[in-house]
Image 1 (spheres, rainbow, N blue to C red):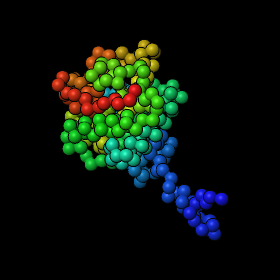
Image 2: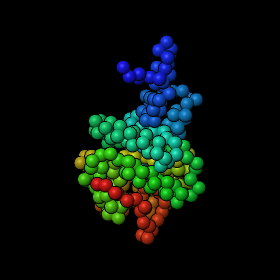
Image 3: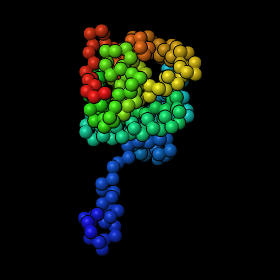
Image 4: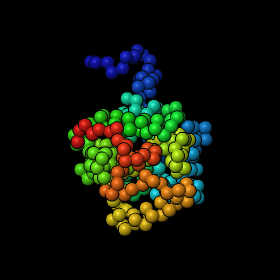
Length: 258
């Protein structure tokens, strides 16, 4: 017989200790998982997210819908683009994909928060964001990791980042973002499924919702966001980090497998 645990069989606590020592830490949380302990890090971060989104003037009504319906999913990780973070984030994105599709949710959003040092500049954050997305792609074990509904070429107007065969729209958030709506006390990335926008289009509410958000964003920040464009009509990749760039910008991402 092969011993399953390297412990003295007379020590009944040893199996539990071994399991606890090797158990993967929980990184994906719903509101029910977070609970109401004000001393916990999860609670504090969720409250900060809630406070920002629930601000009357905050422009994204989609985020407000997710918050009000308890459809914010929180991911907590170490440093962006580390091997451990990439592994955990990949597992949690699969769970988020499954949960969102099962619920046919139009608003469920996953916000991944990283325990990084604060990015010193928007360029610094942009570099980290794309490195993390590249690491996710490179680690993707799906036989066909790219969603066939979107392009894998960041220079194509129909590009969207894909993982596990599913397309996403990604929004970068950090303390030094130039756009007020992107300013957040943590280094973070918000993920939404591309299919959620298509669901809203099918219901005939997408165009009006987009118009409302853009008008609210202009009022919130004082200026029109110069980086916004519609899927298929402009480039999506430059919108992810939130940094204003011109036509000379080249996306550092490379889809090595499709």
